[in-house]
Length: 335
Image (cartoon, rainbow, N blue to C red):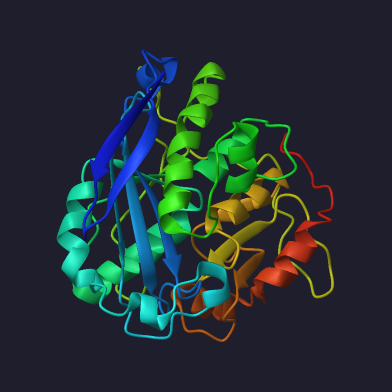
């Protein structure tokens, strides 16, 4: 059923919307969570360096009903970056509030809800970095990446871009790379992916958002939340024996232990998903058994790169890793 609603936003924004109301859907019982669907537009891809320019949040109830929309532009105090992509010029952002002025409103919108985005680790890291600069922390305990969830649904689609999912379910996307429109589109797609996940008896790939360390927000590995009435799910053990370190010029082999550090162009959760699907074991720390470390800033002084130098672990950048990932050699299965 569709209903029309007028929902107030902040900073003078009032949006007239048509919302779909899902009456007693099965996914509301399987996944009884309230959601905050989030999208950001940024000056770049590095949380440590780049800034959030535009932010939109849509409240979605456990039954898929849109409850509230909120959005704002932000004055980053720096060059806005790729204007040809997001259209947010210095003149357009002039006079907008800074992040510290909207944090209280944002905090109330996120508190007690699952943080949902289509590249959730990126949106969360960008906002967590903004919060850290202000000396505060986002009240987010769990996040859900709809791209990761969509991959688990086995959809017969050429890719899992938001625009492709929107087209698949007949959701109109008016302006890509616009935080308000992208959040609105994702809020309409979310009930569809939740419905399929519930029908396939899947657990949601929820990631725990631990407080980031002082130097930068990082993705942490944690058990997944269970569906209602079901057991918690932990990361499965790699089915292949670790063949040892990656050799210079050699291929990746199933069972190799790979660790990631620093900022990546590809969302971290997507890299983890691709690595696991290829038969690699993704770990959160570098040890003597680590086969390779993926780092775009190879000369950086992170804990992981220092450990890699100590153990003689091979370090490759993201582009090299993705090329190697295209041709992974068969490994020895555990007995």
